[in-house]
Length: 200
Image (cartoon, rainbow, N blue to C red; front, side, top):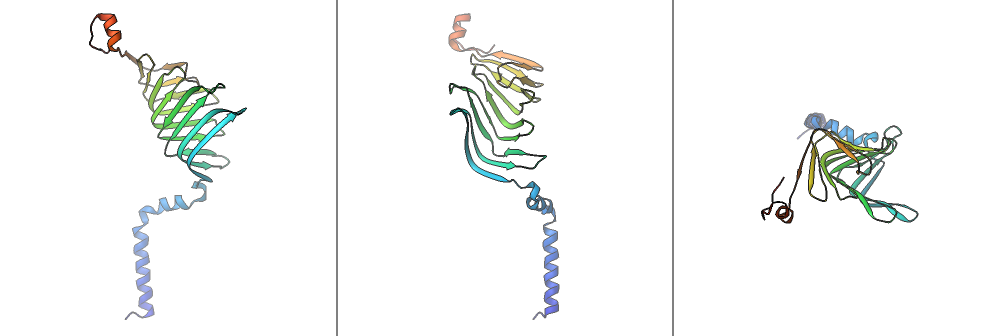
């Protein structure tokens, strides 16, 4: 039977073993318990609308949002992705943006979207990339990753070295460009008399 002295020895041995077994997780534990790292507001399944004069301008859907209100680092984090839609004053859809991850810095007017980023504009052009930045103060959207844009007529452009556009994604330029046109069967038959669809 253990006396009180031996019982304390066993307790301290167990405590040391537990501490060493958790050593690799200490940084994670500190991060979780550090007040500065914790969000001030957490929202699950957020469906939000921004309106002007009772007319919806922006719709936001996200599974999870973290709001941080630190004076020097105020931002909103969307770790599970976003679905954004922008409307004009006539409630017509102007553009949309989806991504697997996003963060928005309110004071800087700056946003980053990552992972399966898809941006569409009023002309039905569709941009796809893995990372996209939105700078409201500079009034531009840009990426340093390869960007692919397909217009409604099937013309496809790839900017291998990056991309930049206005905020509406209606005027844009590329770095290191390649392009191709997808010809459907009817167009190809009119052009060549051949009924087999081709890529040009």
